Length: 124
Image (cartoon, rainbow, N blue to C red):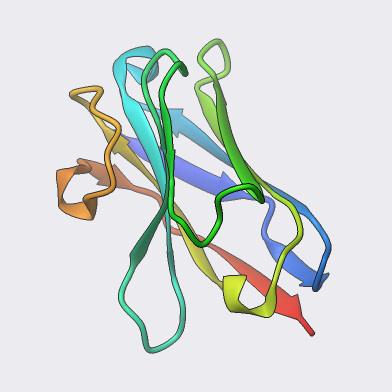
């Protein structure tokens, strides 16, 4: 059974930082590309960041470039999203996703499995 379990969300003031984690099981994590998406209330789910299976290629949405970083630990089957300089507009439910073909990309329809999400709330 495939599971992607996000953690690390919470309430933070603007300018603060959070680190999200996503622990995967039931997939060959070391061969999977991983992505982070987010969905604010009343909006569509949007791409945030993605990382290749080996970690050598990353992509970021323009809105988070320079503030967020994505990394992975294949030994722990975990992907991370470090979020710095948070803004109120970063408030959303954050989801991790796995692309079993190892293709990091921005298209949510390319991902095969999704986590249940973790809430991030940034107060002004």
